[in-house]
Length: 406
Ligand SMILES: [Zn+2]
Image (cartoon, rainbow, N blue to C red; front, top):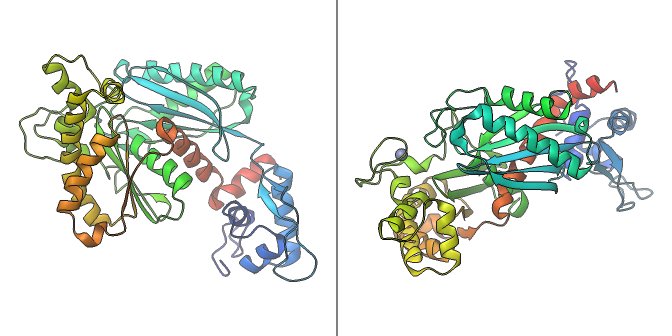
């Protein structure tokens, strides 16, 4: 940390308030002495910068009591991120339903709702409705709308993170290139009366991966999550950050051709999603007289122990496992998490059968193949964390502190 180029926004070379905040938030330095050591700043300069963070309400003295000081002498007071000064809104759009929540800055869900929201109705209607949901959730949580610092949105399609727009999304007809950020920000202000806040948009599998990795596997440096619901997508977290590729297309494994005649929603034939997604399994079930139309119908049948659904899920797992052998060989992850409607014993058995058979032993020797920890909340938690990491990043803190007048 010492000698690192400053991010004070004033052209200086010293670590700024944002760098100190990051050290405290990450737990790498939580006392004044440790911050001095980590940054090389004087006691007085550390004190000045901390004062600004205290005045903003972003830092507080810890409840944990004094700890031994790294500089010797009397025990030091610990510092911690004060997560009571703002909240985050998050929403996770699936093709036919959505989930939204108010979260604390440290990722706890304060109020939550789920319901029918059909992506095919188009962005104008869907995002407008989300604005209504957010207003109701804030009221339920007793949270003033002006305390919302940002909104995170997960969508079932590839996202250009520079613009927050979806790019040729097979499952989101009518959304291609639409200004999601602008519309959701407007819907938020319309329904709450609060000033506009930043809106961040990302792919659902990316945000699920981010939420799960941070919550359950913070020390895993290469983490892959595969979501198998109505479609199939993967999220990759490397070194604690989502890996998106050059245009947000990384992880879009549902449209890898696996050689079949099945027509995919993207318009091509033979995609993995066309033969191994929840949607594909539902179609196979329906063809044989079992009522099922979506990934969530398949999930319900699997939960009820339906033998034909289990057999088809296992077969789908083998198809996905075959593709994952390549993914695992390329990325050598420590954790491969299977999530979504199909993520159960039958599907996982199929994945393991093909994965261990096809991948190099070396790339699976230390691999954990697991199921989701956060379940249906994973994308919400990831979306909330994305907003917080964005807003409290060292390069953004100075500007925000100045805007607060501290
Ligand atoms: Zn496809």
